[in-house]
Image (cartoon, rainbow, N blue to C red):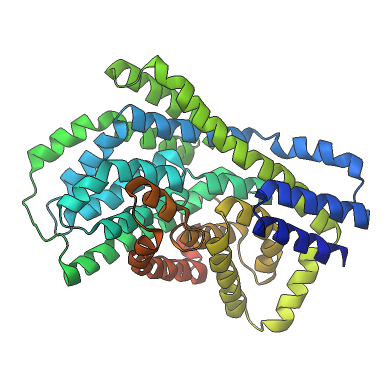
Length: 424
């Protein structure tokens, strides 16, 4: 009864608009006070221990790197390179826009930052190429979903910390699934263009222009190479690679003259605000998960589900439904810290690898960035272009279907997530 009342209190507080970390904190405190499973005197110590993690330092550093890339115009070079590579194809600029989202995802680790950065650069040109404004917003919002799917990703850092899995391992496992989502968005845009002919111009690939664009973008391309190459080769941890990438991006911007010291307070402020949102959630959620574990809630949940679902396929489908619904109403971070500890035992019960579970969970929760009522990327693009959210959501529906198909493939074919792991 105490657990049920605590959950109801959390839901009520969220409905009336109380911040998630406050709602979860009050619910957890009441649950501990009424059940006495853990002494209340441990709350302060547990909160500080929860955020005392070297891995968490990577979050503000990746946000800072993405901000530097935008302010120093390095992100523009990434998009120019993508356009020179794919622009000669039918639907070429749409494809280039999605590829630009993917390249920026290799730096920022954030969906919202990806949508805002690429949206500012491409929206006017997408409309010039014939895309309706609302559809162009949906295209950018969908492509930006790769912000948490292609490593480095803030979501994988959080889920790794919450579930005790190395973020380097998760980054290795997430690369192919993230690229599959990117390809799904591109293919969906190409098919829609075949029907509506938004962008039908087809040019000729110019090798010299491509070489020129690659040379101009060599500094921008070196940032994701440093991050991913350092992590996958084992030279850097994710945190170390984030620090090196941020330092190099800042130096490049200063040397090129596209970044000034006056911009530093704003950039540091952006990183600080992101941490101010994420860290309290993680600290309280870890205490919440610890309390649930002590009370055997995950184990009882697993037993209840296994009484309903008779085979692993049904359990996987049930988890996917939970992730889709949760992603529609709440941000990825809170969903991870609440649902991860609850559903991981269920996944392990049916023989699912914990890494595979993490990739499936993050990929499916990524749908929530373009599905109402939450749909953070929809709101980012709406704010950026003054386009109604409902209109953007309508055009985003085909991309939701495409991403859902990829989620199903990832869920039922674990080899896609595990093939790149350097472990026995």
